[in-house]
Image (tube, rainbow, N blue to C red; front, side):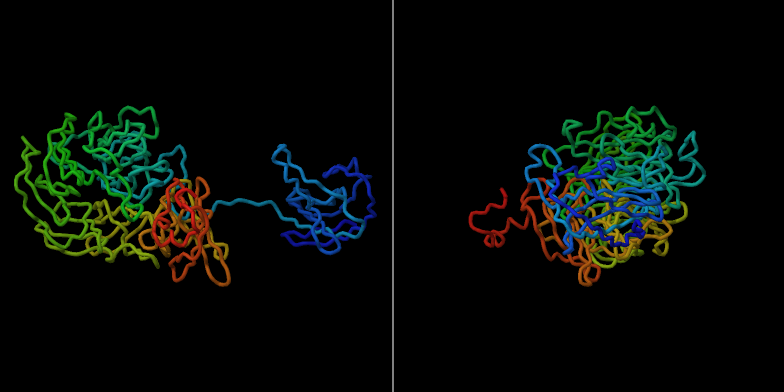
Length: 618
């Protein structure tokens, strides 16, 4: 009678007696036609499934892996064994390009067949835990996906209802929208239009050229603004082979009525036109100014501010100590003005230009006949700021400033510069339990028609758009993600409701929403600036992500964290109280780009190496 295989991977034992002689070698996978030279292994399955059969000798030693995950219908079956083992190895198989296992006839005796059976694996989509996209992947619908994959959000801008005319009705309507800009992307949207509940209504991968989204957004509310333009989007680009390695300002006008569609759909469907064509060349050569700072992934750009009023667009270049004035209608440069380290820009209701600098806010009166000819400014804010980034001025003159340093808050000032309040818990980005009331690198800010402050947090652990009550500082909502290029994340095998996700510069733990919604960060267990040991290099896939449980401890490794190719080294971290501590490492002394890892540049490390070893070459 055939042995019955239990389902769900339970093993069974079947004794087989065979009088084996020194018969000649036969095929490793005999067919029923050659059954007279083979041994029948009879078994039955109660239902259809995938069967694995192995054969052990009387001492329990494996001699043959007969079949592996082979589909069978329900019923009685026979698998055939030719009496050969498969323990030998042909070490020269690769040289003659043939898969070959040199089987040998086993000795006569009593052998044990063990079998496993499992049902077909069914895949059921449960949700995407680190994205607010619906769906989280790209479809023909431009409301699909979420934000940029390569970079965190940098800019946000509220646009009132009715400002956008869309024949399809997707982006138009009586309710306002918030536009979100991100610097650099190869998937998702560098520019995204959201409704006031955070649902994406439209998306565009690039604007102004290949790779870039927008790091600055501005609206012109002046009486003499262009009625065909509802906003401006800009970024600086360091140059690449596709634009002749030229550093340039990519400044585009967002049109109230869509224009001609570009040939490349990644540049939208006619939502924008360049303000300057060809793009304005940013002075300076060499290097990559739009590069990560010392934290490894937050970015400081040539372009540091953008504002518009009565058809004049003002651009700030912090590194150059310069403001650039542009006539948007005539598409011409009007001139430049010198201001030390200009950052965020905004116009107030009276048409005065407010310039955020390293330590305060300056206010200039602008002459319509010569806007670039600046007089002496009024100093509005002269204290309470550490490393200010972006500036927003509401209709009554209240100032909002996103500040870094030891703060990482949005600070609110009266029109005469008095500090009114600070939104968010203070403190630098840190490892440990995640605090949703703390912002990491707050950047672009805007107020919507409901009196809520939207903040683009230019940070990857996590990427976040946070929404706050501007009056009392209460957190109203938060939208996270998306994941890095190529996706990522590893589910904890012990706790399937826990996801570990790593990106350039850090890693975090998220709690998966069982209803299929976006996950919520629980801890930031690693950040480059707080835990760098000089062994991770600069490439993606070098951060701890894959969980391993051992003797009651949780470990994370980067061995499986690269979405493109395997990392040149593997590091093991132990997680204690939400923080990952490195405990072991093995691999190359070079990173994925072939550069020497920082740890091996120190004299102390070189003294510990064997004599004659050159880590930069090995």
